[in-house]
Image (cartoon, rainbow, N blue to C red; front, side, top):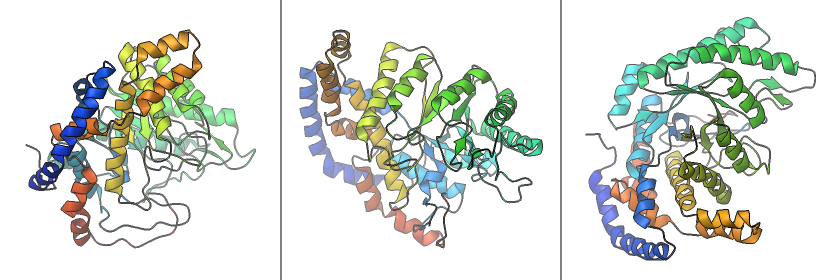
Length: 430
């Protein structure tokens, strides 16, 4: 049986104080959904099975280009991070896997696997890092990595990605995510075509190292740290990469990696249609790649993304099996609380999308009834599915109110007493 970091008795006590109200709210919602021909238990069952991975780096405090303000009890290493992820898993029952970033999380793979298994955690996609220089690294990525003009630097970046695959094989991971910061900051700094060709050649070597059953996720981003041009700048380029590399290559969609006002849900639809949607990094954005908590700024957009995902799920779209992960930077909140709430928000969008009357929606679309089509979506989005989410947590051993249970447990104060305080620093995102 998996270990629990927070006392099960404490969680049970907190749940007991909330259970009666939850049961009344669940029954009331069930009656209203029944009038719409929806079985609430069927939605709850689907929510119970829905999972999103936690990024190891997400449990630390983030930062900006200007400053970083560490929080109390910050994880000292990957093993502390695993414990923090275990708390999120225990209270939400929605985050069974952790996504590692190498070399940040580099450690003996067998020891990592053992540490995670204590808490019933597995490992999601491996993430390589060729966008910053590691300690004792021979060649710098200041001017690029997989697309660098220097063949030796490209070789170093390829070998790093192959190393990530080897680590992942031991851990039981089945995917590698590659995001690079390669690009330029001035017109004329690089030759666009030659840089992209070098990237493709390097990625073909990485792709060739994938074991059977693995996937390669390539991630696009419009800008930053390169501000004039980016080698993998949008979903169109990302799609070309996936097509060029082969059947194991897919596009990863980070919700913050697009220009303002871009229709991300339509991008999702296109990638599903052409069997190249690999998965998501969920977060939210106000201005750019803000890495804010999922659903904190534009929850309707998150719902619209899931509307496309549920449509594909229910229609049995060929090859549809996207990976789900959070990717956030927590500058002013407790990272554990933010990640718990974000996991819940992703589940919320999924549950709401399951409530869409798809027969009615298709009829309105076919009859060009724009008003009623959009109202059909709004009817699902406006439904308060909180009782479904809370009941799913209760049924699977989680907390009805994860944040309340977490605060009652005093976990942050406990680890703050055990983990040395971290000094503040200048800019640099963790």
